[in-house]
Image (cartoon, rainbow over all chains, first blue to last red):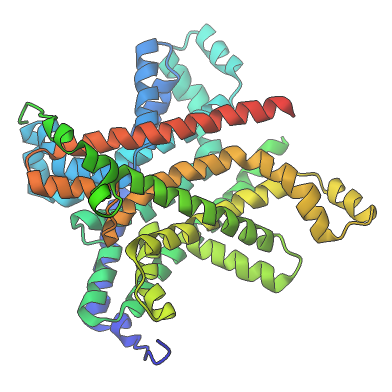
Length: 235
Length: 231
C-alpha cells in the first residue's frame, strides 16, 4: 500500500476530469430541481398539517411519518422500478421522454426531503404565538390568507437555517441516484476508478467537491444566524 | 397504469425477506439489517463519545484535528464513506475485509461524527458551575467529566441517540451497494428473479422499514416526554 504512486493528473485534466465535471453538473441539476420542488411540497404539507380540517391534518401526518421513516434508497427503487403500476401511463411516457432515471430520482428526493422540510417549517410556524393566527382570523382573514400574509413570512425567516441544512442533505443524498444509473458525481468517480484503477484520486476529488460545497453552505448559514436571527431575538 | 397488484410474491418469499438463507446459509434480510444497525450503533456510540470529548478538549491540536475530521465526514454523502472504506480498509489492513464489516465500519465512522455533536451539545447543556464545583472539591478535570457531567449530559441525550439509531436502520439499506444481503438487497434479488412485481416488493419493504423505524421514533418521543417530566 505504501508503494502506491499518486497520479493526480488523472483527475485534474483530460477525459476523466471531464467526466467528473459532467457528474458535478448532473448533481447540481438534480439537487436544484429537487430542492425547488421539495420546498413547495414541504410548505404545502406543513400548512396541511396545521389545517383546521381533521382529515387533511391526518393525511399530512401520515405522509410525514411514512416518508421520514423509510430509507431513501427504497423510495428511489420504488419509483424507478415500480412507478408503472402507480402512475398513469401518460406520466410514465412523459418521464421516459425526458430521462427516466433522472425523473425517478427527482420524485424520490423531492418526496423524501419534503417530509423533513415540512417538519422544519411546522416548528417554525409553531414558534409564532398562536394569538397572531387568532387575531388575523378575527380581523377577517381566512385560514389560508392568515398563513400567507401573517404567519408564514415570519416563520420562514426562522426556518431558513434548518431549511438550508435540508437542502444540503438533499444534495448529499442525491449520490444515491447512482444506484439507478443517474450519472452524477459519485457515479462518475466510480467510473473513473474502474477505468483507471485510480480510486484514491477519483474519490478524493469527489469527496473534496462535496466537502467544499457543504462547508460553504454551512458557513453561510452560520453567518445568517449571527447577522440576521440573533439581532431579531434581541429586539 | 397497469392495474392489479399481486402480493403472493411477498407471501412465497416471506422467510427470505426475514432471515435470508439463514439456516442453510448466511444470515440476511431484516435480521441482517437489524444486526448491522445494532453493531454500528454500539460502535458509533463509543466513537461519538470519544470524538465529542475531543471536540471539547482544551488541547488545541486535539480539538482542531477532531473538528476537522467531524466536519469532513459530515460534509460527505454516506455512499462516499462506504466506497472509501471498501477500498481503503483492505489496503490498510493488507487483507480482504468481509463486506458486512466494511459497511459496519463505514456506518460507524459516519454516525460517530453525528453522535459527537449530540455528545457535545449534551455536555454543554450542563451548567459550567458543576464542573467548577467538582474541581474545587478536589476531583481532577477528567474525573469531573466522567463522574459528574457525562452521566447527566448523556441522560438528556438519550432521545437523540434513539433518533440516530433510526437513521442507522435506514442507512443500512446502502449496504446493498457492496452486496451485503440485507433487506434492500434481498428485495432487489427477488425483484430481479420475479421481474413483474417491483411495486409490490418495494412497497412491502418500505412498510417493513416504516414499522421498525416508527416504533423507535415513537420510543424516542416517549423518552423525551418522560425524561423532561422528571427533571
